[in-house]
Image (cartoon, one colour):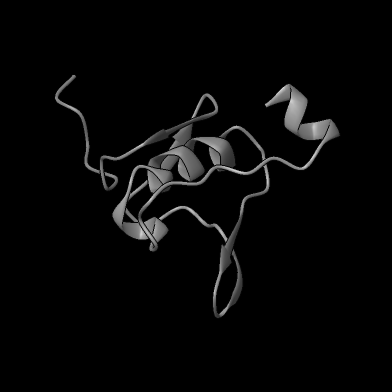
Length: 71
């Protein structure tokens, strides 16, 4: 994350759609840590936002859909 602040950084894989691969979770983690993530698509650029079932806690994405804990 530190090096990406100074230079543009890209993550690529064989899956065309970022929503159907590990890049979704990587993008969520980067956004939760305060980074700006832009998906480069054939149809244009798309800024990443966390899905509605995720929240950020201590700079990390939590996927509990807002469900209460059993504490």
